[in-house]
Amino acid sequence: MSTLEGRGFTEEQEALVVKSWSAMKPNAGELGLKFFLKIFEIAPSAQKLFSFLKDSNVPLERNPKLKSHAMSVFLMTCESAVQLRKAGKVTVRESSLKKLGASHFKHGVADEHFEVTKFALLETIKEAVPETWSPEMKNAWGEAYDKLVAAIKLEMKPSS
Image 1: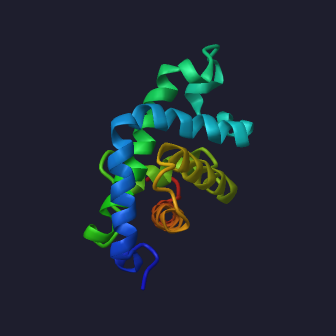
Image 2: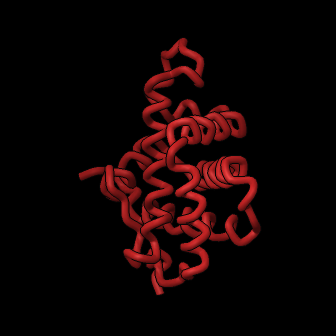
């Protein structure tokens, strides 16, 4: 079975992801920004991967381009997780996997960046839904994230 397929994603995992996403979705903008601020707190050098941050004097938490990007990435990641079992594969709405892969390739995103991002995502979700957070929920979100990353990595090559 391909690691990109959602068949390994159980009904229970899906329920945990859907339940937590339902609670988080109204605050997706704020949570997306927290998610990215957490990434930059863990790995400040990751800021260099974002061209819109290079010459900005605006504090990260007030940067409109970061806010927009963070919300977009958080929404895409969470929506992909929610759809995983139903679709049977990783699905993304706003951008194709080819574009995501090419962009990540172009900017030199490496495995450790994905690991930091996973940690930041799980911490953000844990803080957003502390009353329902559990090891099972952590595993469900972790698996969904890993499948999304695997799909992006397959497309990480120069854009044609």
